[in-house]
Image (cartoon, rainbow, N blue to C red):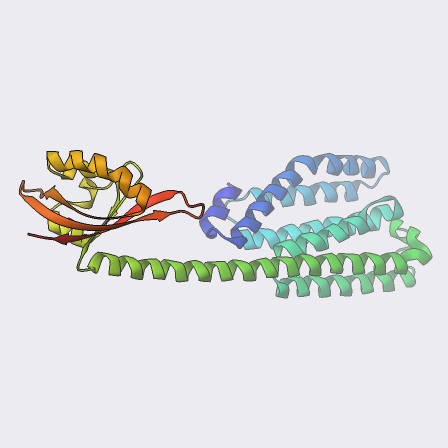
Length: 312
């Protein structure tokens, strides 16, 4: 269901790639995240913290429901995922103190945010996080949290929080910059592809509107391409020509002549000759050919390029 939402809402590109990665990470969280969540819930219940254990379990269920829902858009899923994941971090931080991984999970949340969100959303997340931890620090100093495990940090709270915040924000910035650079490169490639496509379209227009017939053959003498003038001269449709052997469009004696001359043409790289070709209506037409061989970057035969002039 989640993958369908991604494919419906995004075109192939960098954002599509990010969403596919988000989909895979989400599936990993749903499958493997259940193990630590269940263990944490069990430990909370064992310690008599029934409400906290149930709350942790409910947060995991809420994340899973959001990620699997086909009625929620991909952008909203990202926001809710970060919100629930961040809430889980804070819960673990408050209730497990130095024995839990709340601050480590917070760094992971920063990294995920940098990957999922744009700059404006990341700034909002960083500011919200910063204000929240100022508020928590005030509560700790005033003694309101002395009965919670978070008070175990005592005098090390500030250095640990500052280190965690700095590391998390640094990761967020690095990941954001990397993806911003990738996005710029992707846009540049898209722009280059558009220019190439436009050039190809212009070339194709000139190619088809050229006053002289043109044909290109492969190494076996089969048609790779012809222009509109060629088709008009001999009365064929493109589908009747491409992939067919050139000799099939010659009179029998010139088909034999082709088998003799074509290897010489490929070897010497150019040719000036005449062939008697068959119009679709059965009439024979003398055609003068000026041809050259096109090679690849390694100098290996790629295709022929021939210009046709009607003699009579």
